[in-house]
Image 1: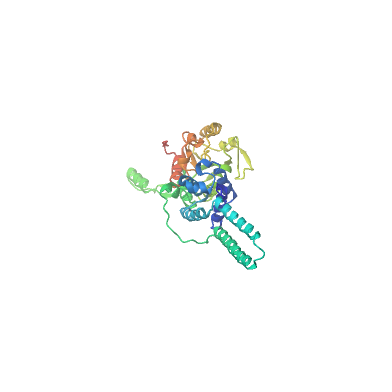
Image 2: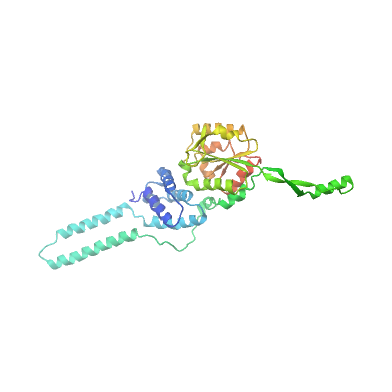
Length: 376
């Protein structure tokens, strides 16, 4: 067993990433600790990682998914990861150094008091050995430089993670503007040239130009967002979704409901889950043109497949479809992680997409009324 078990290794990486400027908090740290409970994927210790490259790659992918939000952060993590793994010392070496030091101290006590010169020489040697041990430990745990030189890294096996977290606020704003329900109810001052020409052709003379009204976007969006638990690492993405939809998306009406795991009869108006509201009351304000977007991992983050969760969510989706069929699901976990989880079953019931640029665009198209073709 290694002196640095997986939890201690994650702790060192977490503090190192925070010093490097990564936006990480306690929720992200606890989410990673919960995820490493399955020792079959990444073992128990650093020694296991060094002996099995597959386990090391699995753990690195987990850290990259939970703690990196850009390609630059992924590249930075790669260098930090290698430096920390390389300096993690197995426990056997630490115990060996302790045994050597103990033997040296025992040897010091047994020195003959008659020969002071020999005793002095032995003490000098002992001091030198102790100093070497201290220097070795100091070098082992010495802080890494704040700015390390950039070295290109091969990530041939992790291409899906390089391009996964590219859903920026700017792209959210850009995509929200495609969510439209135009109604011509504005001022009637837009000159319609083709209609004017057609009218002149019918009447045989020009009487007056034809004007059209300005169109307004009367889109109504309902966001149902899973909060806390396995969704804790994705809070900043869901927060950006809400803020951009309300403030920068050009959508007339945006309603938000928060829930934990299952949108039960009562959901919440705030992200801290302290202001309950009856789901039926929220759905009462919806009509056939309301767009509904659910944001949840659906059990994919921890690989759970629970039929009671599937049945409960299916009932909620059925209630939503009594008001509108314009519904889509945005899942923050990669599609590969949906397998053998509740999310896999739910993806057959409601259009489900990954939370990246392509998936977000497809979700917008779906709630705009484009025909959904399940792709499994």
